[in-house]
Length: 444
Image (cartoon, rainbow, N blue to C red; front, side, top):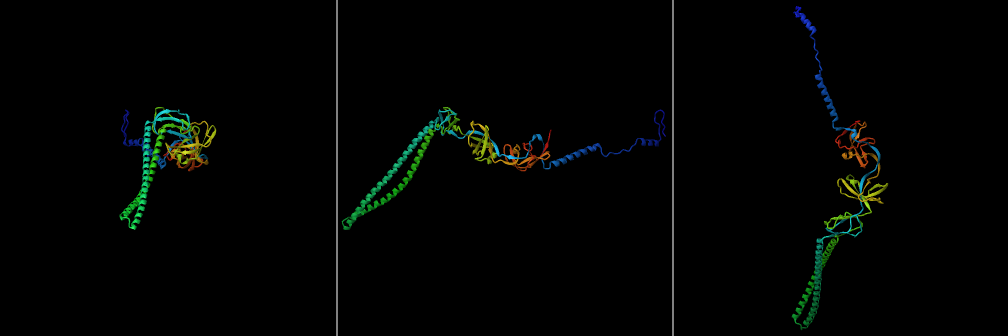
């Protein structure tokens, strides 16, 4: 046994007592923990990632969605109402009849008799042009035509002389045949009486046969020459007529250097000065009908198949309605638009002037009751084939196939795919047209 000394030291104790005290006071059984912080954090993180991955798979299984703020889109209801089948057009007042002053041959302005904007009468001299080269050409053409006509007359005279020569030859041949026939008859009578010389009879008979054969050949030659003369004379007459026509055209072109007003009207666009050179086919100006007008309007090519001659249009001015009818459709399409001309049905509105613009409505069909949605910018993105339809709870808008019909500036006719009272997105789809679903987010 150990004894503790009074000096503060430790006296030795018995080994058995030391072991008992140490086991009771200091040694304890340590319980091992199953879940520590180091183990819990990775488990929670992995669980969170699993939940996110499962949600992603559920949300991305073939459906493309996008969260959209309600304030950035326009939502409109499907209603039932009266659809007026018209389109607004912007027409430009133009003269009903316009005649252009285009020169046939160019030249230099020698004299100017009227000013732009003047009222002119048909036949009034407006401008005189000078073209020395053309005048020389006309003089040469006149000389050439005269020479050709003289040649034709010479040939005609020769043909006529040839015909008369054949006629004289036949007269001479007929005379010789008649003379020789009587001579042969006399010699034959003398030969019968034994008085005539046989050689004289044979010579007279041979000469008679010669003239008879010559007459046959002359008749054939005359017939052949007659046919050729008729054909040649017909050709010469046609050539002569064409030469005279050419000369007439040349003189007419020369006279066209004196530019005259072809109709009554108001002269416009005449911007030429003395000494100015005008090219061949150049335009000097135009003459407009100062009292009668028409409208020329541009229409989107989308409506080309629905616009036809005779369709009605109207516009209002000073509280009065004026009706119009399409009179002409220009088939050329420029920058996605084509043009039409409209004539007033009755009295033209007073106070309109050339170049003035008029807002009008072109009727495409009869007014009918139909399901309608507002005409929005979505149409340019979808072509009217599909739309985003808002769900009943307003939390999302889902892509749906639709069939839309006629449209005007305010409304579009619904044919299939939508019900009255449903809500649709009518604002542009350019930023989300590839999506299948829009999740609507209301930010107050």
